Image 1 (tube, rainbow, N blue to C red):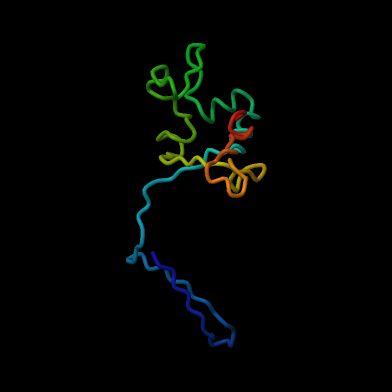
Image 2: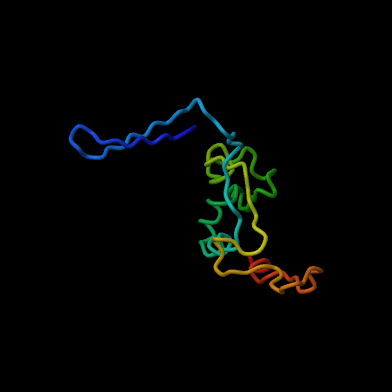
Length: 132
């Protein structure tokens, strides 16, 4: 899809802008939709009540047993409120995990901030990687 913008002076003497989308021209194919698993997202989710966490991430509570996505045999067929990855949710099919801090992290960090450390001797996971 190409967006073409035309600017011209209209009959009133005002500058007018016309936007035209050309759907016959494509440059890339969308392979899916998804989200990022970040330390900030994990901390936010952990701050939710357990029922809210269940509605967001898990299959639900069936027969008094918490049926997580990791144990999908307990939730077959899946209930209709798997918020992200089910056909009854928003149908995400892609996931991104950042290495080190990212634009949504609560702080800026990397795994090795030592200049010139090409052997990564100072490499270390950060608290966000362990706590969340």
